[in-house]
Image 1 (cartoon, rainbow, N blue to C red):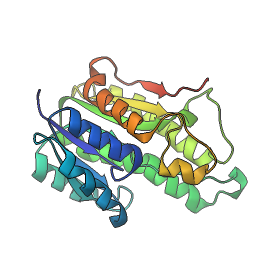
Image 2: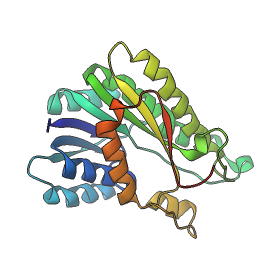
Image 3: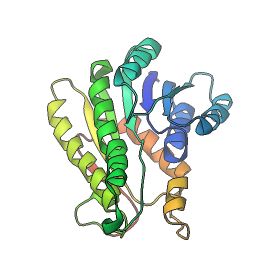
Image 4: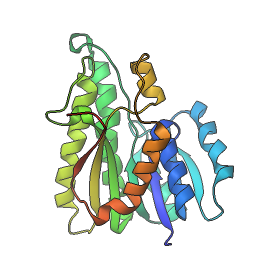
Length: 236
């Protein structure tokens, strides 16, 4: 199998961590696992000794909302020169009634869920190989016609913006032969979900979703481009 160079944001916990683990376990690859908080770094370090010898995970501390994107570009270029797969998983959630959401609440969610992701893509385009694959992690909450939940207006709207960005970039990146898709996830049992909905048990674990995202990231661009794909067991 051809070795892949993979970049994953939000890779220190939950879906991002499990996606990194699955990518590294199932195909030869070098992964740059981007994390924001030092207290989560140990999560990445814990899985490194369990990986096959033909794969590696390199942690990189970086906040997509505040740090210079040039430093991200420089590190990736120095470490792996080019990128085959970019998985934009970093996200944050604030659950509050719409009337109680502050400007800071909106800004935090939009900077992480939309703007930081958009700038990361923009920065790394020069390093993306032909036939590379960008995978944005969206949400069923951002899908038109899906069931909506009170308290998630800021989160769902920011994810909806990522969906539209995906469609726009599929057109703009066509000449570069870069594919881009968005997985609109339903409920997954993660730390973020548990904090937002303490009494809710999601039907899918982070490990299960990580396996799915890893497989899609490696193979999905052969079948899809510019698509917003719901990944949920719920109806609608």
